[in-house]
Image (cartoon, rainbow, N blue to C red; front, top):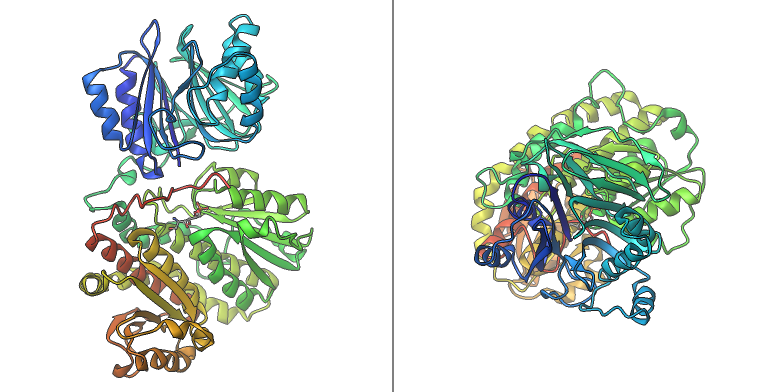
Length: 609
Ligand code: M6R
């Protein structure tokens, strides 16, 4: 998704903006640009394609100045070209704006501005903003803040904005509504960014803007107010992760680094929440609230949804309360049966996914209690939910989620245990066994990584396939869905997942000589059933890769390749089996030479519907 960086201080703005935009590359983009105030005028440089194109252009024609804004754009309205890229300026070049989000009433505003004589030079929704600010600037006798306020109150949609004005060389204005924006604090310099990693090399002290807030930023001062002009005091938030944590640490790709970080990330999620001999702690929820609810609804998108599928099973098995799980994009339009006896769990790594956020807002309006499971401190879901549980996985840079998934699983297991202990529906001895195995989850995951070399070799054999099929039953089916998503998003190989029992109801027609089938059979109790399903595809010539633990009861003739998965309790097998599937998709994509951390057409955080 688009990225924003802004700077006001004493250093070269262009250098800081480029550096910040580079750190935001992972969000996905198709063009980039910066505007710098050179003390007299606003000077602009925009290029389509990679940031390197912008850097080259700036080497040829440097932009000098100490105040500026920059942007990486991921096209929504208008083609991905230099003309449509940000910053956008007013007709007279006085106002420059970078924008993340969508202006829903831009058509109406655009028509109105055209009638007033404004000429548009792009196809974007964003361009209405600088024109409108310029219009109000003139009406307000050159008052920059008043012009911005008048403009943002006329906008419908979501927007994070950084704005500079020719007449105010040392001022930057930042606005947030439904799209994240933070302010970084320095000494004789301040920053704006859509995401913390963009400014982490410059400062660790940040102010988190809330919805409908405006900040006027100079190099020595930040003043925040709401859209009505009421001043706001905001505590400084100290960022605890290091810049290094947002870098590759010697791995070839962020995805591989993040796969290997999972034991540490899982330990981070467990820390302080799971102590044997004590009840499980689940931040953001008290036992009394739980006693008043009669059902749970989980909403999420993509990988977070797949984590939710596992969560549903864990909660129902341990807490014995009905759980439904919905894709947030479906939930919000399905007239859900949500009421004040419902607990809605919204899962979102970024905490900014538009559908998940909208689903959560709907749930609250229907009277439900909401809890957010998220990785990003201060994210919108975390601030709007009744309670929040942070996964503390550290920043996830690769578009393909890995450590976010496993830490969401851990969060959901903790929730299931917390609820079961509160309601007392499962004997404590049973819960204690699960608790002590969950405490070993970092170690279990580390053991799963041991198969990496074998998986790398296997990936060479199958990377040129056009289609692959994933099979599983029960929790193995849920994990298979996540494995299949990983494969398609970074290797662009078509893949589908089927529950073993569904095969003969249609999908088996797709199996022919050498079709690759990845079969997951980690739950001993379903092993026999899976064996029959695997035989069905073997008979039709499939090339079967079996994921099972060492003690698999499946006969050797049931598969072509075996990937060993460490043994654990049936309920926790997703934590043991997902590592192999993540590694397999990583190496398949690597063999094919794809841009693994920035797959085509995808963005890290989907803040538009
Ligand atoms: O930030 P979120 O967890 O809300 O994101 C949800 C999905 O967009 C995300 O999981 C997506 O499916 C990942 N690219 C999968 O790897």
